[in-house]
Amino acid sequence: MQPGRTVAALALVFMTGAGAEAQTLDLSGDLSLPARWYPQSPAFPEQRSSTGGLVAEPTLYWETAQNTSLTLTPFYRYDSADAQRTHGDVREAYLLTYGDWGENFWELRLGLDRAFWGVAELNNLVDIVNQLDLVEHPRDRPKLGQPMARLTISGDWGITEAFLLPYHRKRTFPGPAGRLRSGLLIDENALYESSDEERHVDFAARYSHYVGVLDFGLSTFAGTSREPSFLLGPPSELQPATVPRLIPYYEQIRQFGIDAQLTTGTWLYKMEAIHRSGVRNLLGQKEDYRASILGLERTVYGLFGSTRDLTLLAEWHHDGRGHRAPTAWDNDVFIAGFLAFNDVAGTELIAGILADLGHDYRAVNFDLKRRLSASWSMRLESIVVVSADPADLTYDVRRDSFLGVDFTFSY
Image (cartoon, rainbow, N blue to C red; front, side, top):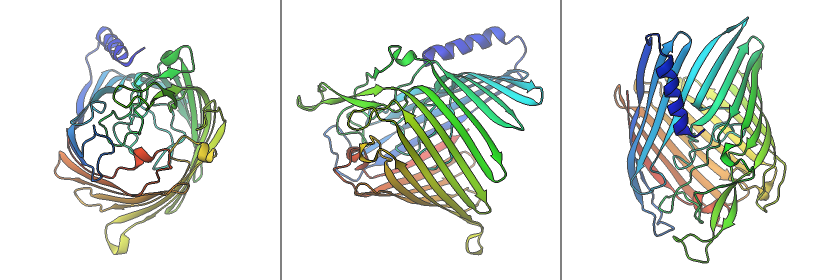
């Protein structure tokens, strides 16, 4: 079922089933005014050096009856430069019902929802239920709403989640005028390994629990990959006749994953690892592979006797395919510091450096967040590319530095 039809079906369920008066009706959300400036000269004639826009993401929560509610979160972005970045989505539109089952607790969600798995900061290998909305941000990993039936059962023995995923969402990519785009244009029409195409029914499950200071999760997925490989297609009318375009190709895959976090005082030890089968490598050959993330985090409370807290983080991202991996995270190190001022304005400063150990790529990022009033907040962010390797598959995506500012009204 397509996302728009899912929303209509849920609305019909509530219109016909709301015999009891609604107990709660709550509207909240964000309205943002973002802008970006790119100091490097555009690599392609369609691109601009600056862009602005508008982002709206309201959330309606409606408790229709005891133990039953509806959550609706539409999303819309207008971008002044990239027509592909101007887009709308339904992030959430699900019916939630829950109750007790003996000594256990159960929860069922039907509709469009977002799920998050993993413990790492920069990237999450195990997180595979939702599709990335890649035109939104290169690192924040925003997600498209995923049609699903999601059953959660929890007790003293842990938490089990099971997902039935009847429809696949294609990944979004910047358009010809978008910055942070690939050198070759990406076709909007995707190909699928399965004859059912986007209507293939996928399955995912996760079990999570803790033992003393160790929190862990075990997950599995079988179905259409959220991360496409690419095939060379005929040239686009927007490029020279000798330049091919890229056609996304979604394989049928199986993935087994584990994520864990060990907490010892002010130290956190993090790990994510997956084994994935059924995907193509950079040479176009199917290759089963393993990938992992190892992380270390330490928080210093009351820095130099002040009210500020400093968290230091280091992560290593590794893909067992090495240079055959069609991903940016084949052999990368990320080191960052998170400074929480613990003031009334909730000021947070993040500074980090990302280094690709396989290519000559170095980038420094800064991120400042602060509340301006009870309703307004500001985010100032920058990614400064110190060096980029033309031999890197992701060179065109990674070459651009940018400075961005975002003013958000929350209600």
